Image (cartoon, rainbow, N blue to C red):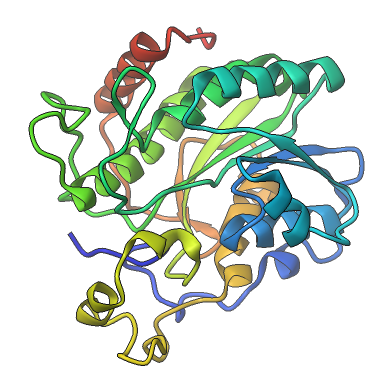
Length: 305
């Protein structure tokens, strides 16, 4: 697998120079509500600011609310609420608070991520990468369907045909490999959007997965300098390789495009990059349905029928 430091394998800065703000230039999202996980750092921060600048009300769930307040200080139209995606009780509590205050949810951007982290277990021993966003989407389902025309955007990476779901050992109990776990999580994000769209389309809920490209963000915090130098991402002084990386604002462009573009009306389930639908991504609906069923079994949540 070709590994990335950021949120996107296999797509360099040469694809598009558009920013999230430019995607929304002249657009009016007044009256629309968005939830952006990871919305106070990197790509998520850029997406949050662009959506808020266009008039949307943006709720940013945060495991570290104090950091979120610092990052988003002065940004109008943004609210911050506590959420730890690794704790299903916290996910449920956040969703309950949201549904008490808000009847509809127009946009859900599942942007929070971890990359090549040390072995981490959540809940009853689950590997840490995947289930939080699945549970959050399930629990916010009443608000998504009530919107009438909602979008869910699942942030993935540059797809590789070598990626696999480890069906016989989904939780890496027989040997943890940080890059295999990361690749599985990003494939899971694509499959999740694919099956969610299939189930959600009759209710007006459409879903997309996104490769934002290569961006230096705090996502690579678990990697050493030596690892990033060996991969060719940075030099020994920490300078990024020329021409390789986009800015967070450029990386967030496809997230915001997938969440708002009228070009996508009537479509869904697609894998997107460079503000367009690509021909890439996995094409097996059976794998998507299988992963959904496993996620439902592990979390006890399957509100989309």
